Image 1: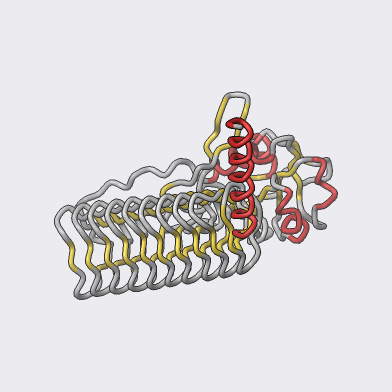
Image 2: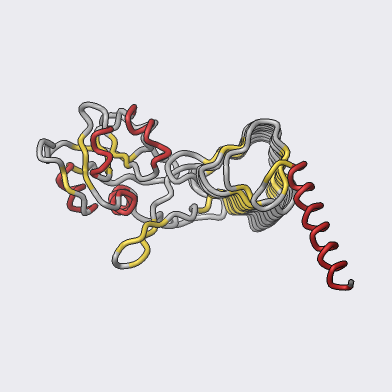
Length: 341
C-alpha cells in the first residue's frame, strides 16, 4: 500500500470500472461489483488490492499472491491462485498503468504557507541554513545540519544527526540516523517507468518510497529514484559516490560501496558488502551476491554469485577477463609480425 504521507488515493473502484479504465476484460465468472480499494505488488497484496503480472520472473509471486484481483495476460491465467479475480489483457503493464493512474493521479504540489510548514517537526539542536524549505508533516530529528536551499518534501522523515548539504532535495523518503547527503543529491524522484500503447508512452505512477539506513553516505549529484510500488532501499553503512544513478525498486544491502558514475537499473538487488567500481552498468532485475566485486567500466547482464570478482563488458570473472585481454594482444602482435614480415 502506498504511504499516505506521500500519495493520495482515489477510489475504491469496482472490477467493472477497473476493466473499463484499464481496457482489460473480466473472466465470465468474475463479479463486476467486487470492489478493490488499492493497488499493491503481488507479494504484498491483500484481498482488497489490485495487482498485475507482466514479467515472468514474478510467476512464483503471482501463484502465491493474496491479491483480490490481478491484471494478467490470458496465457498465464491458469497459474492464478484460487479465488483471485482476473482481468485479462494482452498488455498487462499498460493496463496497470491506466488503473494505477486512476487510483493515484499526478502528485500536485502542496501550497506552502511558509518556507517551514507549521505542521513540520524539527528536533532540538537542528540548524537550518538560509533558503531551506520543509513541507507539511515532515519530521526532522535532533542535531541535524540542513544546508542552504535544501528542499525537504511533504511527509519526509530525517533521523537524528543527519547532514544534508546545499541544494539537495528529498521527497517520498525516510532516512535513518547519521546519514550524510552531499550537495545536489536528488532522493525520491519518480523512477523511469512507462508503458507503451497505441497513443504512445503512458507514465506509470511511482508509488513507493526510498528507505535509507543508518550511517549511509550519498555523494554529490547522485540520484536515487523512489520505488514503483515496492520501496527502493539503501542498507545501513553503505557508501555511494558522486554522480551515481539508482533506479526504482533497487535494494542495496548493508556496507556496500558504489563508486562514481555507476548506473543501477530498476529492481536490482545488491546483497551485503558488494563493491561496484566506477562507471559500471547493471541491467534490471538482477541479483549481485554478498561480497561480490565488480571492476570499473564493467557491464553486468546476468546474476552474480556471492564473492565473485568480475571485470569487462559483458562482465566475466577477473581471471577470464585478463586471459581474454592477453589473447587479443597476442593475436594483434602475431598479425603485426606477419604483416611486417
